[in-house]
Structures are given as C-alpha cells and as structure tokens.
Length: 173
Image (spheres, helix red, strand yellow):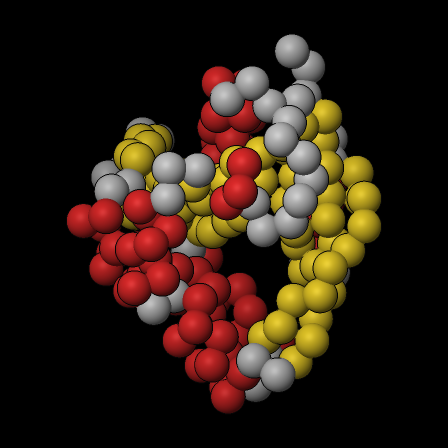
C-alpha cells in the first residue's frame, strides 16, 4: 500500500467540495433527514466558504491518497481559525474524513499522526477535536489515541441540534 499526502491550495476548492460532501453523506446520511442534510451541506461546503477556508493562513487542508486514489482529507486549525477557544497552545483537528471504502486501512491513524506533527511544528501543547456524541467508532478511535473528554458543544444539522463531545490530548514536547 502506497500512501501519499498533498497540501491543498485554493485551486483545490472544487475537489475539496466533492470529497467533503461524499464523505459527510457516507457517514451521517442515515442519521439525519434529507432536508437537514441538504441545508447543512449547502451551508458548510459551498465553494465560497471553502475558498475562504483554504485562504486562511491558520487552517491547513491535506488530501490523503492510497495507491494513487483520493481516499479522504484532513483539516486542522490554529489560533483564531479554531472553532472553539481552547487556547493559543492548541491545534484543532476539525476534520479527518475518509471515503467509506478506505476505512480500516490505517489512514485515520496516518492523518492523526500528521496532525500531531503539525501541532509540534506550530509549537502547540495539545490537540483537540469535536466528535458527534453518537459516532461511537470515532470516539473509540480517539480514546485509543489518548484523547480524553473535556466538555461538549451544540452542533446544528439544519434545524436539528446535536451534541459534539470535545476531546483533548496533551502533547509531549
């Protein structure tokens, strides 16, 4: 298995939109109404919004490829780009999204390791993320990676209020 990583630029906005919608639907379609899913995807993954996110110097996106096939992507945030205020010493993993066909291939761990590398590069002392409270597989994965629960916040899927568990992992310098 050959794994490759590529940092995205603004020119990748359309491809990012496509994989974002694909991976989000594969993960969450079954848990949400079509109306709420459509409203969320239209808001979260429109090209203008993704372009602004790609232009933000405090956010980084990476595509991951397995055997030259686009498998998923990573998005991390530091400083003011973080979706919650967990301090200047933190890096947020906002998204580790993989196409369903690439689950259980070690790519989630690969992207997690890249996140830790980026956090250390930026001199951060902890990494954190929000994960849907009913996404048991993701929560178990992050707990295996050393994350602990440190709160929660609301997340709106259309008009449906859902809860994300905030998980934090301290880093060794």
